[in-house]
Amino acid sequence: MSAGDGWVVVGLDNGGNKNNATVLDASGRFLVSELIETPSRVTEGPDVALAALELTFDDVLARAAIPRARVRAVGLDTPGPASAQGVISSRGSTNFSHPGWRNFDFRGALEGRLGLPVVYNNDGNAAALYAHYQLFGPLAPQRASVSAIIGTGFGGGVIEKGQVIKGAAGFAGELGHVHIPLHGLIEPDQPLPHCNCGFTGDAESIASLTGIEKNLLPYWLSRYPTHELKRESIAKAAKRVRGLGEAGDPMALAIFEQQAKAVGRLFTIAANFTDPDAYFLGGGVVEAAPHFREWFLARVRESTTLREEQLKVARLEVVPDLDMAGARGAAIAALETIHER
Image (cartoon, rainbow, N blue to C red; front, side, top):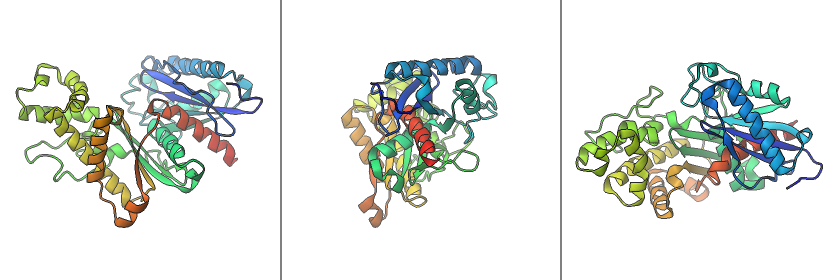
């Protein structure tokens, strides 16, 4: 998998449990086709995690048969919240709960450790950038897209003319924390959904695993008092909802119906705010069985209100290669930075 004598960039995707990595050459060709994962060790604090990330860096270069001297830059993505410059929030986060992460300059520390320029994005932005370039190819710099990625939380990214929109403080594209209309979405007797961020009625409070566990499942179990999930702890039960949805369980489908409506209403807001060429959806719900994925996507479409003119040009797509999308998007961001110089 050698790329001759040309320079390359490396993409590093740092997660709560695993690091993923890839190598991208100057022409935009990925030199690693498979998923490369190593332990991230972020729960042990910055020093241990940085050493683990450097091991990931060296490992992916070895797999691609590329010496360090040919690396021009590194793209890094991490979960948020973090600033546009890669400084972890002063309050920490789910993934960065170790006290040493608070206000930690992750980008700067990795740059110093590797002795290479490091370009930072949050994980939602990196995945969104990869999806954008995969769909539009050479036309990517002329197109706009919005990506929603549903997992434990609700990540996202906004791309305009091929560039990630980060905002003044780095929090642009935090689509999970956009408030959405709840009328007609939740049941008349259903409690208002609360998000861990402190908001009430944002997208993440409904369309996320945390939203299922904290808000949706407790209510729907009260409507289905003899349901088999009543015998489980709420945390374990929440993780089983997708499988039950794939099997056609009525309660699980009611939960995912609400999630699809939430995503559709979020995309409706985006349609009137950024008017993108494409809307991307990623996460476990679209990595499910094909029949369930198509069912969910159809309900997202039904809940997304676009104008006639927008319907003619906009597309709803699935984020491709989601396990590798973060590292690949991080690498694309690093490559674009070099091309801009």
